Image (tube, rainbow, N blue to C red; front, side):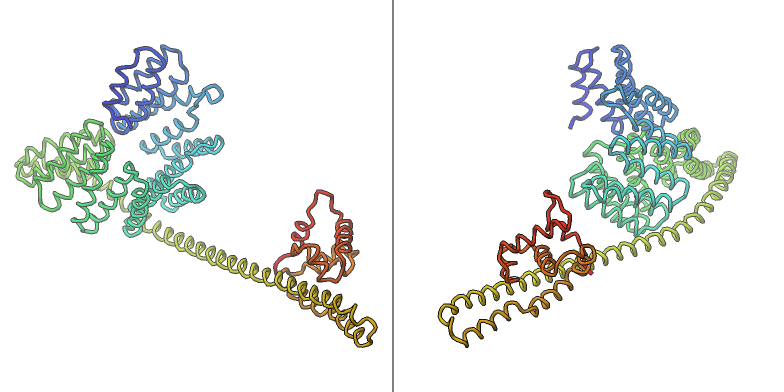
Length: 561
């Protein structure tokens, strides 16, 4: 796998204005839009210029798509929206070798979700989902997960859980453990959102197991980071720190700088909470450096607030104010109300510590006003969360009940299949035993007849043997057991084909058991030719064509009672 530097070297070797360079620019701007969105954006914009020069329509559409992806990663949502719309407009599924199809539509939905335009986002998700299904693409799971996350933003947790479980159901019939692990993380995130830490942790743990088995470091750090957050919320700071450190190593090993920024901020929060502001400062500073380099505003703002808190705890209010004012500008411009509110509160404390009481009062007032708005929203959200937990618990219990019923049904069906197989084997064994007995008696009769033809007693013995061979008692025993295993086969056969003779019905039973002609002849004391004649008569009365299989047809009649 190429890294940024290797990609730059490859591009340096490529000619300035040809299709090969365009291919590389499109490839690398897509490959690295998460790891280094600024560099990826430069490449995507160069790709756009080159595609226009070469009049490559597909290249132009893809370049707009990649520009949108890099802009989205940097929270440049207006540019992302414009670029994705342009890509949608230019995409020509019937003309392009590799059309974009649902890609830019889905991505535009993600932009709208970030902007709070959730209804518009859902409409785009539904369009992209329909396209994915129509063209047999593998993006259904990602789209359903996005729909679940949008529903979480609306605090519609039961609906979110439905989307996420729908995506999981798609994966039940597919050998795709990687996608399964991603969905498990999303479900864990939902439970974490409603503070059901035990369930959240169980889903993150299941995802972690799968990702370790796959060696998927790209996703593993996310699951481990979330498990660290849960440990932190539970007050298990030692475990939390260990998990954060492991997640950071994994993120750095695959050059996921965005993830590294989030984890560094978490480590800063942990160290500050433990009363180690110097160590916290180091983590926050590193997180800010990473966030600035890729324009990751959420981490940037949150880490600046942490930096301010750490300075304040060390009696350096002026340094705290400097960091907090920077955070306030970014959070206010980006509409991140919670971070803005937190920043206002810490700023007021910092100005108070500096002795600037007028400034402190001003920021306390702004903090109180914004906090009232957020608290009102949070109260409503808390009510919804409680209701959602009840609904989700009900859904979970119902899902578990249905799974238990399905398991019982499967177990019962397996027992019945096993029992039927056992009885069928016993039935076949009985038929063969009867055949063997009749063969023995017939052979015995043939042997003794020449020696005692004129003897009156011999004739009596012969008649007894004949009576035993032709006795219906054995057949009745066999027929009773056959009916226990194969239900109403004979009754249905007689009802549907009344023209069959008793002998033909018996032969039909033995054909259903797939016995050879000779065995049937011995069992019924008939010649093989007679049995064959009866087979032909049965086929004629059943109105079967020459191509029809008699055994298959008879097996299809009747059922297991």
